[in-house]
Image 1: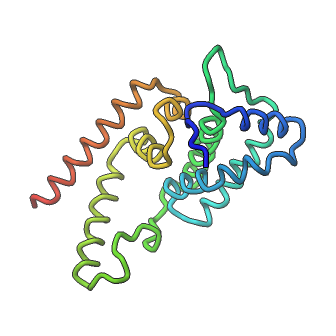
Image 2: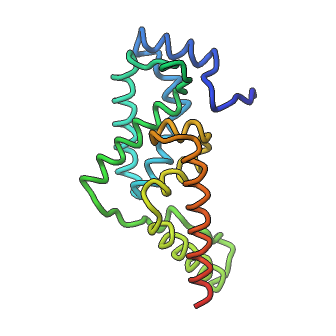
Length: 191
């Protein structure tokens, strides 16, 4: 398996994009490559598998419709297909969140405890998870987005492209978000 840099479009991916721009049936390999990434991001943001599936579908429908206008180079800067696609996914998620301002967390998705743990370990893991989720919810939307996109293994450059901010802003936002989470969790554990 070839390990490729996520910051650039590979030659093969550029060829695949060009084929898909000419014939929408050629979009399938791109869909297969990125569907899990988009679905995981949508699920993390929307916290409901059914709504995440709809958002993922909408993302790919919009991507396919916009694909003829996709350009890997804009004003001399590289725009990866992955960051372009994740920008569409983020916009779809934001639209969905406007329709449903609060989505309760599906407990079965984010379980930290294993099935082999006893009741005490499960209770501790559940409590830690709740603390983390509550702290995470207190971060700004931009901080949450940076962390979620990092979890999806997007590079700083790709996150900057998705969020429309500089790479430096991504780094400082990520740093501040992690620091804030540490502070909130430390305060919670001191009580």
